[in-house]
Length: 325
Image 1 (spheres, one colour):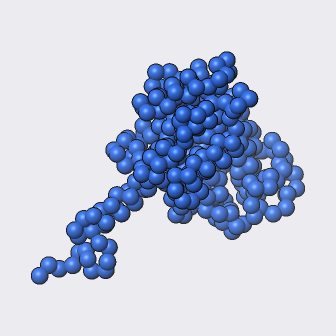
Image 2 (cartoon, one colour):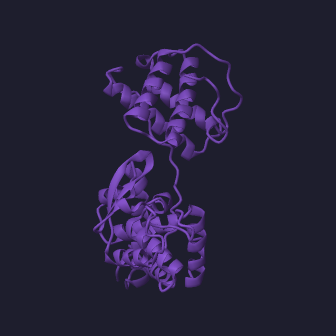
Image 3 (spheres, one colour):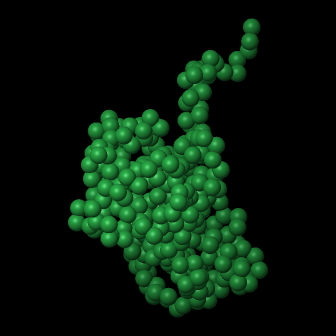
């Protein structure tokens, strides 16, 4: 394993590259973990790079503590490493990512019977309040969906893209790269991060818009669902720009991106009683904690509706919990 310092952007606050040191059994264990992630789990290159960066730093720290093999590592060593990350100026989100890398390494070692107990099990995540993403209201989404002129070639395409994006919560890269072979009767077979496939349903309105676009498009031979006027797949940048134009046309204020519609898809589903695990599967999230952010948004909206419309829903001091006379 290379013992170079983490790359710029991955190793904030970690200082100069340390001198080379002998490889240890911990380094070899990390190499085995990364190889398994690459071959068996088919993780994305960015994820593998993040794991390598985080675990290389952990290995150096453990070496300085005199730990040479995975079985020697104690929970106190890992807790001290987390403290050192904070002392070096890493943000809470960066430290949380480091903790995930550490936890997955030791879970792997436990499954491989390389250690008898997982020393990372009791290491708590850094406490930080994750900002809630901006989510459009259902009325704003409706206005956005009505903005394209569906009688024209461009409008038919753009309307189908926006309808399908809101109906499925796809990532923009998944949307613009969608082939016709992935479209079935009310279902999409989506190839997401790490090459993993998932099934995502879509409703009648998206189906109607998609069929209308299929009839309107001139290049019938292209394997891609959404193409430009040269028959080439739409780019993310092109769709992002056109979506912003439709948002302004619809009177939707603020920055509207494809990811904002993905947020709206998830939040509106949960607000109407969808199961969190089902939403996780449709979004293609590997970890349900990523999906849970939308539960917080849905709860905030419910609280706002209650306060605005319930006779005793006001949040003024003394309006709740007081004695009744």
